[in-house]
Length: 478
Image 1 (cartoon, rainbow, N blue to C red):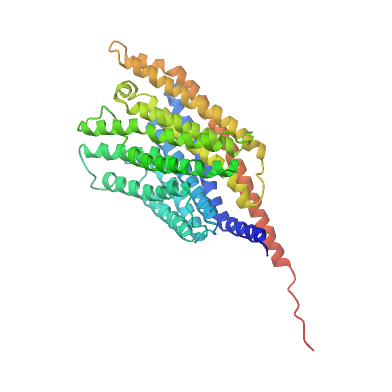
Image 2: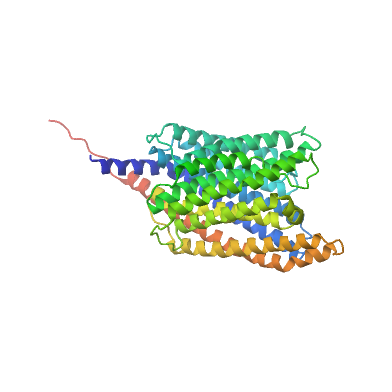
């Protein structure tokens, strides 16, 4: 057997080991993406017609809004990220997935935990801490599921045949360690029967929200992009030294951010947080240089495929990081705090940056893992253009509304009702963007579900043919 035949056999073995796990993770992620965006639309409608759901306590804004955000983050972002991490570790290490049954069990535990948490939020059983609204039972399921998948990823990483580390390894392995640390710490200190009290409580809440929504998503998203872009353009990642510099500065400066400039805490905490937020520009510049040098001059057509998703996601990451740094600056935070500017930055981070990177990765890896083309490749390309329009209409009007609100709030003679009314037109445009994103999520889910159904049908036919096949007749020696 020659070298090429050995490589093909190895790739087939890797893909087969990943298939069931990735379908379990991505299938559930697609469902929760649709659910999260649908709940977000419902929450948005309460601003246009406040009495629309007045007779249904389950659909009040205080319940639907956190349920929508948690469905997007915990239901879509995390399982999609874990599936992509498993695939990248197996591909870079040129080794099959270790303990392949464990991620399948963990994926089902994870989706059960998300379901339990969302039901708890909608019926009013929530901790009240942002991004920690899930009940204790749901949090335990999520934590256990993450540890199981992280154990599989670590075992795959340790069994790799290709020993040289790629920059993607640094970001993704750090993410596997980062989430259990911040999630367990926040739950133990805020969501137990004896939580911390006083000024420490909001500090921990801000620290956790920042490390989860900004740092963790950045680690996984940038690490995935650093793997995908060189692979697609067929050239090595430019300036590996910059990649290491960006990795170290991102986790060092990013971990100190999150405390608002006007927070009622000791003055040195928001000052340090603002300084770290300003210094985040350093890793942003380094990452931008790496991306530009890697894809600059590459003759790869951008027709709505994985390359387009990844490029657009990285552009959104830079913009989101700049918005985050601006919000951390005391001069601007006095204007932007308590407005729609903050939610605009969070949604750009989740849907503009992270979700687009995950879409590109899934559209790149799924046909390889399944050994079949996407059922509807034109819908995948349409999904890209729909997502661009949806993200733009969702985030840009929200950011403008936030600036408009902030400027008016500086004038004491402007009534609060007039401040809110000034943002209503922008908010209506933002709702249209949410509806367009919901349409894109349906296109994404359709490709995954049809591919899954086709694979199950083919598997059933193969098993049925094996059952019906005649038994081999052994030769009788004379």
